Length: 77
Image (cartoon, rainbow, N blue to C red):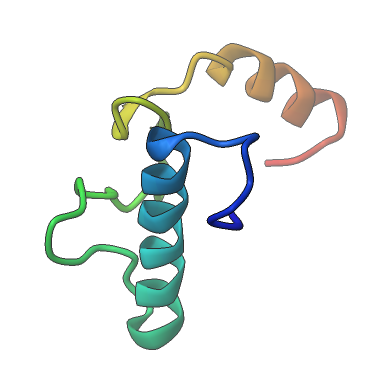
């Protein structure tokens, strides 16, 4: 986010920096987690997702039931 942009506030810039750090950590090490970041849990078979926003945290996937329907519709196991 450009520093001089008036479209974004300090919270937007902080969230952007947090997301960039997750991605950089993953690129460097294969693990998005790092110092000062909320833990991003491994999701293998989990019905939890990472939600980014005012409170970045893992939470139950609100669309888990829909994903199951779509998987069945498209023959995904």
